Length: 146
Image (cartoon, rainbow, N blue to C red; front, side, top):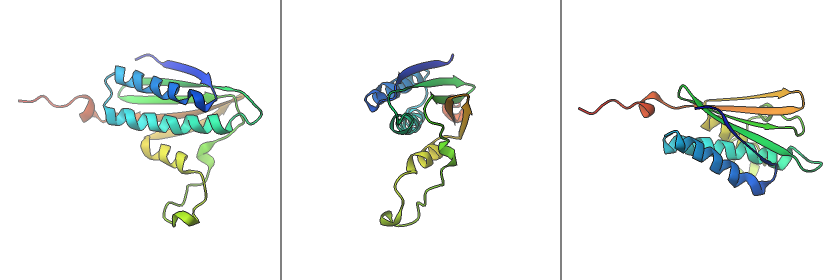
């Protein structure tokens, strides 16, 4: 599959458009529903962070790229907002009581749990978060029934 992308305003009103895009691209490639769900949820978390925090001074946009190659789904989220590496945030304490936990940080934790690989880089004035999900071979090419 060639790389497909969508650019939207960094506004929560456009979140559904991004998630629908990812789901349609992956469903169109025959990706199993469970994998589509995981990738869409991770994308939702990453895009929501950009929409909520990347542009404190006003309007901005973001681009989501989706690619499937060699049984690996790659989602990239790009924005020109404030420099921010979400992977540098401390891991949340998920063992303490809910009342004792700090607010925030669970979205990045969820992304790390759902995806096989997550990477961040700053390229010029652009934040780039790349997330990869391996599709298990057994799911892609089940053995023939005899």
